[in-house]
Length: 294
DNA sequence: GACCAGGTAGCAA
DNA sequence: TTGCTACATGGT
Image 1 (cartoon, helix red, strand yellow):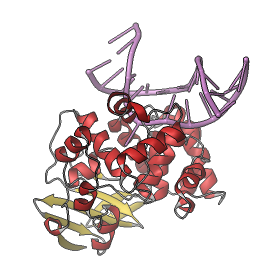
Image 2: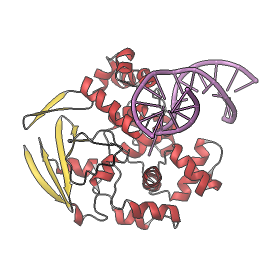
Image 3: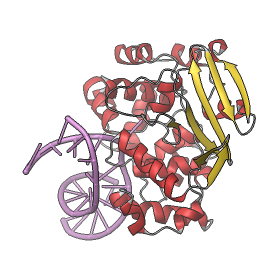
Image 4: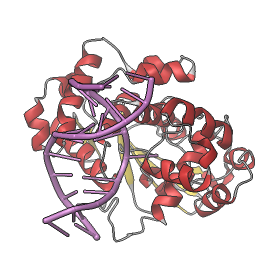
């Protein structure tokens, strides 16, 4: 096992690990005390979180300006990648449009970063997200990992990776319904089959122009415009993506009514323009978290 | 017991 | 294209 510390207070804009991994962007991190997303508002200020990537266990906790890690490998490059520690958060905030709601959202959760999830895990997570609360999405993804994820040992403990496309493709709809996925069960199986068969892979969208990338990701079963935008924003570096979920739609009604163009594609263009094309996804994520937590 | 949750697929007009 | 509607399930 290797250990290390990253001085995140030195990063432009810093880091808020809890807000970053518990704000409904990623469902691939788990809090080791098992209290993630509990409604009692349990504060995980310095709780340990872990994820499994490339067969490596990455554990991390934040104590003030220090990000401490313990892992089965050198975790520093993984943490920079997964938590987007190279993003200049000060520049992101500085580029935000002059708007009361947006400024309040940034002020409320300063130092929260976007995540960069592995594409397949992100894709399945957000297929599961349809009409589902954040805490339950997390439970569903955890159940998938427990049932189908490869075990990985680290320091005497067993962790579970997110399942491979092959393992999920081999699962049955009935099995996934038993895990509580409901009507999303066949979507997950069919999408996993598409990836396992080599028919398509979400990572293929990375090099496409934004709207083509959204169309590409939408070909997976259970994936419409909104889920596709989540995959682009939370795993494929499309910082201009603005997932139009229920919360953002409400904010458009209340704060940006002129951006409502009646359909997803046109409203998306308008709200991206309003939020600032370079970092619209950051604005979306802060506003989402701010409204949902209010 | 309705009502809702980071919506989408399938179908009709 | 646009406009319904069904869809699982657990919490409030």
